[in-house]
Length: 250
Image (spheres, rainbow, N blue to C red):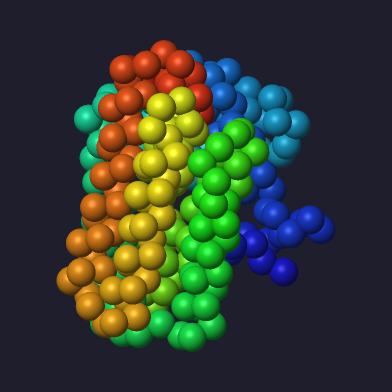
């Protein structure tokens, strides 16, 4: 069997490279490795308790993701990110998601996939039926929101666009749900989620009506919510403390 990255899988269905990649990413985003911290292959092998081959591949992937920079003397260093860089990553994601939505509208979406998208937004509607939002509801919203965006990426019927979107979403802070928990600290958190959900439904309506330009514009506007949440996070220590990876922002 193969994993989603094409590498041989172990009995659990996840390749050793992916395990190493996720483990190192967790250490970086959790703040255990500060910006500028040096990571050597041997250190990572010892820290993760894994062999050198998957660790070497994982370090290269994290460099591709933008979390690490190669050091000329050997090894890698943890990157820091400016607010401008994060804005660019969000903008790039919005652009590609807009393209995916336009292609989905123009090419049409298989009924089963469209049904899955509607089931996802129906579940979000049920979650937002009452304005009281706790940690559990926000976590569930994150799960459903990420599912919606993954399904939408696959609806464009383009492996090229879908794979590029996956790469962009792996960029630090560019995930569709990267700033949702930051939103939880805002007084208008519920209202913002309601607006985002209305945009979800509007995009599906545009796709169903085969209105490509409208679908693209809606998804690009949808990404603006992440820009707003970034601005709020940078203004509030309480909000920033909710952001996974906040210590990487300079």
